[in-house]
Length: 202
Image 1 (cartoon, rainbow, N blue to C red):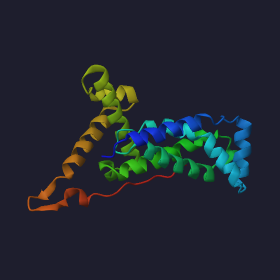
Image 2 (spheres, helix red, strand yellow; image 1 turned 90 degrees about the vertical axis):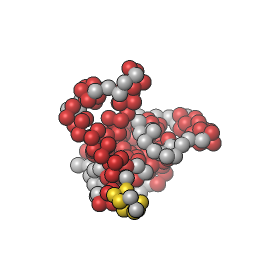
Image 3 (cartoon, helix red, strand yellow; image 1 turned 180 degrees about the vertical axis):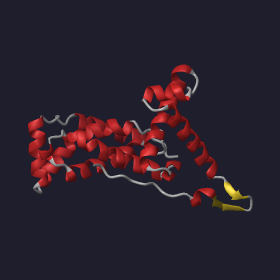
């Protein structure tokens, strides 16, 4: 599992300081940049992206401790942000970031899945499992126990049955990494499972 280093921390701190200096956009400025970007103005595209870098960081932080350093999560989220800019239609009346959040999350989650056992789950289920794991850790920190399926479900507004199902799947995926045969370490059950199934918005 990748870990943050002191060098990473230094780069991250400098990056956060830099993006925190970038002014936020008004709705009018956002729409203007979005229209110019759609018309092929690369400067407008860059300005719209830079103004939303802080939001990418906030989203990326939700996926920490899943196998990738925060810097990598932010980098993947920024790629998702650029995809969102390319596809955003200002005439539909949405705030840009309300549209972009889906692309940012999908880019980050795809990277997380490629680095972990979650690669064997559809992206929507992998995202739910990430939320369950995060909530379980929060309960562990607060109460000293992992919490019941009902407690986790209550916090996430999931059905307890879904929490139990995904928890069971998570344990199964871990066990699938064990060799099928004692004399063949390369023959894992997991080789017979499918990859992630991405979904497109809308």
